[in-house]
Amino acid sequence: MTFKALLLTCEEDAKPVAQLTELTDADLPDGDVVVDVQYSGLNFKDGMCLTGLGRLVRTYPHVAGIDLAGVVHSSKDDRFKAGDAVVLTGWRVGEAWWGGYAARACVKADWLLPMPDGFTAKTAMGVGTAGFSAMLAIMALEDAGVTPDHGTILVTGATGGVGSIAVQLLARRGYQVAAVSGKPDAEQFLKPLGAAEILPREEFAATNRPMESARWAGVIDNVGGEMLARILGQVNYGGSVAIVGNAGSNDIKTTNIPFMLRGIKMLGIDSVMQPNPRRVAVWAELAKTLDADQFESVITAISLADLPEYGKKILQGHISGRTVVDLSL
Ligand SMILES: NC(=O)c1ccc[n+]([C@@H]2O[C@H](COP(=O)([O-])OP(=O)(O)OC[C@H]3O[C@@H](n4cnc5c(N)ncnc54)[C@H](OP(=O)(O)O)[C@@H]3O)[C@@H](O)[C@H]2O)c1
Image (cartoon, rainbow, N blue to C red; front, side):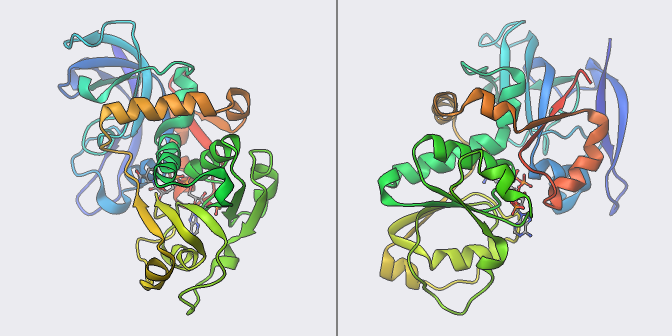
C-alpha cells in the first residue's frame, strides 16, 4: 500500500526541493511504532526545514513536520497498540528523523504520548509545538513566582503561533496581557483572544538606556534581538522573562544592570527534549486552560501541497494564529 508524502530532496549547497509523492512502508525509518498521521502542524522550525534555513536537516531525502497526531497502525512496543490515538511534538522529529508531512510515520515509542484528554488530532496539532511551548513558558513564569496580581505580562511576536496561544492561555488564567505585534490588523485578531493592549513593534526599537520605567511582571519573548534587549530594561523588580524564540534575531546586546538592580530572571524554554512526565503535565494544563471553541477559531487547515508556500510565509512573519496540515486533503 502507498501513502502520500511531501518529500524533500536537496543537491549539495542548494535549497531543498519539495515534491508530493507516494511512499511505501519500506521507505520509512526503522522505529517502533507506525502511525497513520491525520494531522501535522506548521511551526517556525518547519518553515526552516522546508526552506533549508539554518541547515537543520542534514540527510536527504527527508520528510519534514516536527509535530504529528494520528492513530497507531502497528507497534513493536507494548505501550502502544493498533487504534490508539497518539500525539508527538519535538524530539528532533521532522529534523533528524522523518516527521509528520506524510500520511504515515514510523517513530520511537519513547517519543509518543497517548492523545491527551480533551484533544482531537486536529486540536492537538492546533496546539502543536507552538502551544506546548506557550504553556511551558507560562508554567516557567509561574514556577518563578509570577501570579496575575503581580501585573501585566508582555507577549512578543503575539500574532504568531506561540504568541497567539500564549495570549489566550494567559488571559484565561486571569492575567492582564499586553501584546507586541508588527501586523497592522493585530488588534482585531488579538483582542478577542484576550489581549488588553496591543503595542506596535516600533515602540521596542533599540535604546541606549539600560533601564526604563518598570512595566512588566513577566514576559514571553518569541522574537529576541533588540526588542528583547529593550524589554529587559522594562521588567518589574523580581520579574521573569521566558525566552522562547528568535523570530527576529539570536543576538542580544544588553547590560547586566536590570539583573543586578531589579533582580530580574531570564528563563530558557526548550520544547524539544522535555521529559515525558513534564509533557503530560503541560498537556493537562493546556486541556484545563484552553477554550475549545475560541481555539478552533484560530486554526487554519492546509494540505501537503500548500506547505512549500506556507513554509516561506511563516518565516516572513506573514501567518497569524495556527496552521495545521490535514493529511486527508
Ligand atoms: N524554545 C522552543 O522550544 C521553541 C518552540 C517553539 C517555537 N520556538 C521559536 O519561537 C519563535 C516563534 O515561533 P512560532 O512558531 O510562533 O512562529 P510564528 O508563528 O512565525 O510567529 C513568530 C512571530 O514573531 C513576529 N516576528 C516575525 N519576524 C519578526 C521580526 N523580524 N521582528 C520582530 N517580530 C517578528 C511575528 O509576529 P507579529 O507580526 O505579531 O509581530 C510572527 O508572527 C520562533 O523563533 C521559533 O523558532 C521555540
